[in-house]
Length: 239
Image 1 (cartoon, helix red, strand yellow):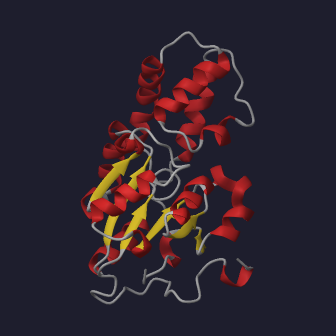
Image 2: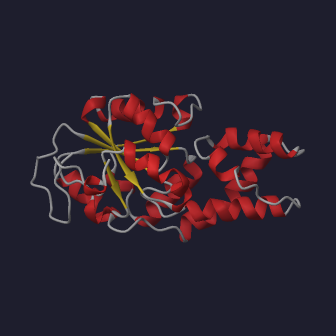
Image 3: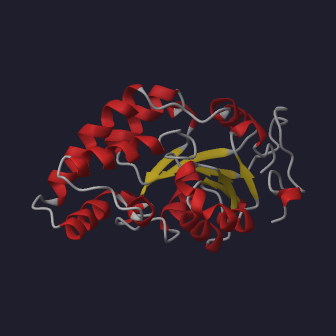
């Protein structure tokens, strides 16, 4: 991708103008939550720091990128193994859940333009899904808090595909199946490079959302994605 098409694909209408009714009928839009629809990745940076500092462990520079594509239990198991912690995965997950839940229920907000964009896509005939690694205890309060829960036709997570992470396309394919839309008619909105690669391998279009957590992968993301976004005001109106 060149700088000329970094913010839009040449064959896709973008901008703030509402899409004509029905123009996206038969199309699917599949959204990640953390770092894509939700401005929430800083929550987990803080959780990592607080959790490890409580145990006298500094956060390693590669920790966040290593766990980025893992699902919740995998992260707990990896953290226990890496730092030699005595807790079980269930105990670790319960502690993280408690630390993050308040933030998702009361503090986390949607990325700029997200609510209007979702409503516009839905009105234009697109079917909408969430494909996330977040467990229900976090994703459901967050979606209610930011006012987007009612806009989705399906919500799936890595838990629904046997805890297979986003380094494989299973969760995106399940989302497409739940929507009743063929993979090649789906567009995935994602901030993780590994997720974008998986979605692409399934024949889906990919639009990348910039998030600080993926800054190191940004050049590769720009080369891979059909378009990149810094908020949803310039998102594609025709899928």
